[in-house]
Length: 437
Ligand code: UDX
Image (cartoon, rainbow, N blue to C red; front, side, top):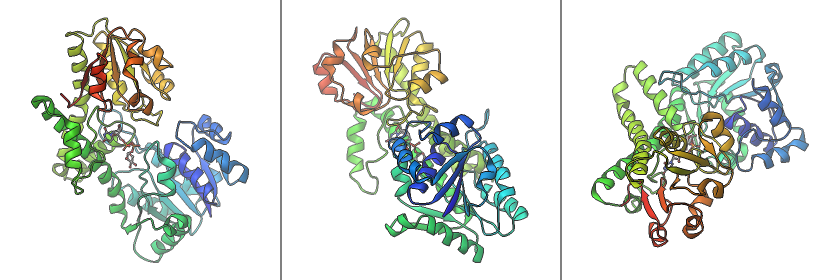
């Protein structure tokens, strides 16, 4: 199938490469010439496990083309909208500039029978608005909403074999034709038995934000329990293990610690609240304000704990922060809890040195005032305090004796509850964590 992908960020670049891998003819466009040049040279513009290999695999087939000219999408039968919807500056709501620009660029190239497939996370109502614009310019084209649930770090697997495929479409023969066309695109996953939910446009748009709100709530729930554990001397990791055995609850997404960040969860729950306000149902989502607050309080709590273990002041204290990415297996530092805590410690007088296996360059671009080290050894050398802020496997597996030989003081804050407290204490470390005694 001839398909186009508009927007080559985390979502679009991975989607384009995966569609080409499945055998489709893909034209992917983006307004960022540098990003397009990198992708056209067969390299991923960001770190995503397997993406470089996938680009190299499809390059010789000639099935994947990147460019900046929106006219290149003409001739494709399915057009995937994959642009970002970041938080609007000074506001909770989503910034729809990229979506609106992408649609405006696409409209002149739509042919009868084309299907515009929205994958971006948008405030409910956006798809209907786009459908009206499309109908005005090309009445024989159709809009279908097909939200994306990919996780960074697992983006290729999540795209090729998602845990569900959701279509939002209009009733009637045009909707059915669009559905049949997209079923062809996703034939491999559907044949594999991936569950499919076919619904209306509004529901499909809500599914994405509802899912992310649920995940954010689950994380903040366990982080709220961590606050209780801190007040009572209880251990939130044992608590999570125990309640997680109830399969109605489940253990996943119950890891207490520095909380959630990244380019999705924080801005999605805020945009959802903003949209609920516009729809006159803000009360339905006021709990998400609490979810957001609990999450942000964890960052402050970590800094308070750092001060506490350093005898009440961070002034002049050398702190090694392990991790800058918002989660492991990613170089994404958008709304990273690790960087947020690092910056707060620096503002309180600490000399903070941040390291990360993949995200140092991105972190430096966002917070040039912090010191950065390329290696763990350079970061922890002569440190008065080590803070584990992102649970990369190399940090989880650290040996307390080896690290202990490098630091000035054996003090560690486990911001992700992944170290073995007994082992670190036995090696003479002061071990503290969030929600653990
Ligand atoms: C998320 C959703 O999982 C995905 O379905 C959606 O499409 C986009 O948003 P992503 O942002 O890649 O994906 O990250 P995710 O793995 O969900 O983690 C989000 C944040 O929550 C990270 O900062 C992570 O460290 C944190 N987290 C996750 C916890 O603090 N505790 C947990 O138990 C799980």
